[in-house]
Image (cartoon, rainbow, N blue to C red; front, side):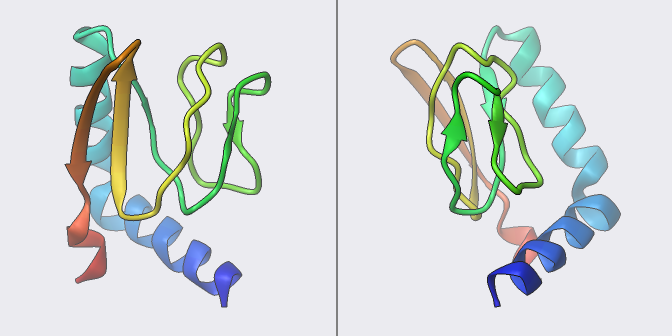
Length: 89
């Protein structure tokens, strides 16, 4: 079930949201934010990856939790969240 959900979300991101997510990532990066996206997995600070995942930490020195229904961006104690609820449609 989890694997099927991961595959479904990955396919939806690639087909419908990849450009939107890329633009969002680029905008946040330009604003010196750190961004990642994933599905209920823990982001490994050393690897800068979310294990078995479709997302990654852009800064391997930061350690944040991954979530399937939101994109999280952070710089130190500043947080920005963006819903990707369109993936549910």
